[in-house]
Image 1: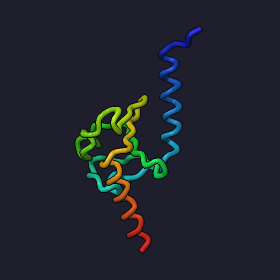
Image 2: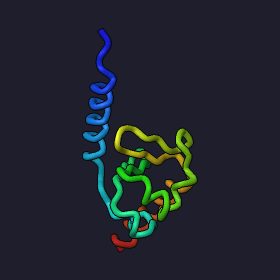
Image 3: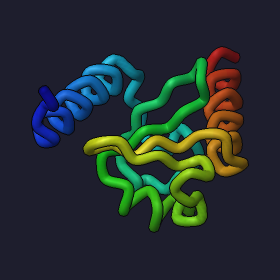
Image 4: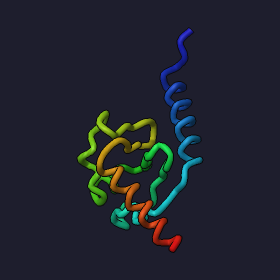
Amino acid sequence: MRESTLNVLDEVNNLVDSQVQGMERVPASRLGLDDRCGRVYIDRDDRVIVVQNARTIDYYGGFEYIKEGEGRVTVGDYTFYMEHDRVEDCFECLEDTVEEEAE
């Protein structure tokens, strides 16, 4: 018997929500982005940036050029950014910030 599509969507969203909640949450400014981008979730190991509201990071962070399927994936309530020069720039900025703070 086939499960309800709505139930499957809820399960997927709950699974993604659980994964994202375990990520580090930082101010976007630590990634070299405009303060108006707010706070974002990051996965340092996989070099992924995750947001719940993509509109602000798209507009103020320059992420509107990352197209769905080309470094951008939306799953449930979250948008994931990865494998793109813009994302790499953010993680390099974060690493520079961490090094400066350590000195």
